[in-house]
Length: 290
Ligand SMILES: Nc1nc2c(ncn2[C@@H]2O[C@H](COP(=O)(O)OP(=O)(O)OP(=O)(O)O)[C@@H](O)[C@H]2O)c(=O)[nH]1
Ligand SMILES: [Mg+2]
Image (cartoon, rainbow, N blue to C red; front, side):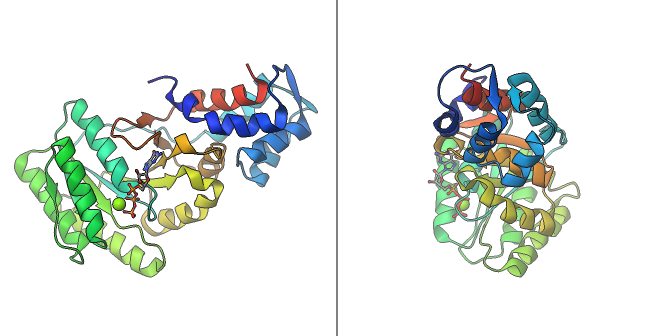
């Protein structure tokens, strides 16, 4: 899958090149570099931190070392080492939760794992329908209920069903409304507690979906989710459609959480394992046109 991350950075690279130009360079003046990093949506404070110790003319190698320091976070490792392995997918409205669940189900199925979906976003009828459609397309079972019913009960039933049927992985969709933090917190906490009642090791992973087109402005909501429920890792969606790819540096720097995958399109196969080296190389290519 090498190359997909770089390709998804095309718009970000364009933004960078609009500042630094398209010709090949050995070194970049520090001020121009700062401007380009901000254009790629790395937040100002972090840009200052990156360039702090760099000389006035910055080589690719020196910058690379600084950028690599930011990704010094726990490794993103998805090892399906328990059964049923339960993943809770959380994030704000429209971030791409349901689509990412379809992508994860597709990927896991291709790896020979059996998968069940839990439609614990009971807030909207359309959300249940959307996940049901994916279940049909991907030919995986789904546990669902009527709109307005208890999402924790759906979570319980999904895990119980996975146990009963010997299914490898349960993927739980959740509602993302954030207008009332207390409500969201109560709902997510209840889902987690009830998941543990269905199986003590569940949920094995709580993954936060972040809309990549929101760039650095998504950081605050991500912090809220991390505070109220505790997040194991991040999936960034819509990286294909954004010039704000640099925000991944800010997100990782603020949250100190690993990025597991990035979404690079709307189809089930458009999920790519995040590779920090490829990501950094893509940004550097934009800057130095090599
Ligand atoms: N281009 C692109 N579009 C994406 C990606 N991931 C999701 N989308 C689109 O983003 C929109 C919202 O995705 P959903 O999966 O419905 O988001 P959600 O978080 O489940 O939304 P709610 O259920 O309303 O909270 C859909 O139109 C998806 O097709 C991605 O990686 N790339
Ligand atoms: Mg959804």
